[in-house]
Image (cartoon, rainbow, N blue to C red):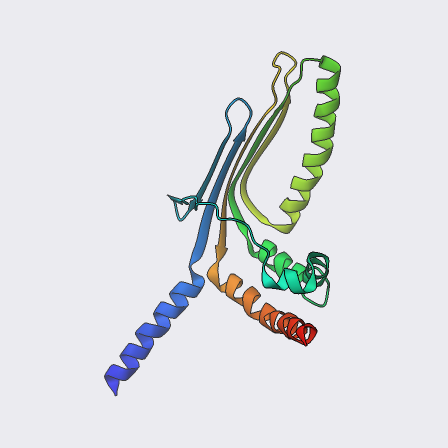
Length: 187
């Protein structure tokens, strides 16, 4: 009987350890003179899969793309709420965004710079209020001497597996509801 409780205790510790374990994803994107995209999961590069011929899923064929999108983003489905839940539980360890705005015409460079600032600062400010940022660095530079704009983006994100499991389990009834609707439409 002692062995049973020891094994049960060890299994409980393993389950608790896994649920409290965090998933770490790093993303690096560069656009400009050189284009580069790199995705790391637990510090290892994700390999690209070979592209297959795209086919529509059965759900889209039966209900139509518009109806599926309407359902997924409706309040009844709860997906926007679950996405918001995941976003609020996400921790951003490092966030770096460097944008260099440039064009051959100085006036066009200034206008583009103003548009980029008007777009990026409010978006990043909102994300900082919703998510937990540990370290952030954002620079938008207006370069009148260069002719090409460039963007460098790097982020390292962590989220606990427990939060992902909670979000998925709260969506299961909605997915079942959608599948029943598809089955009823077939008949």
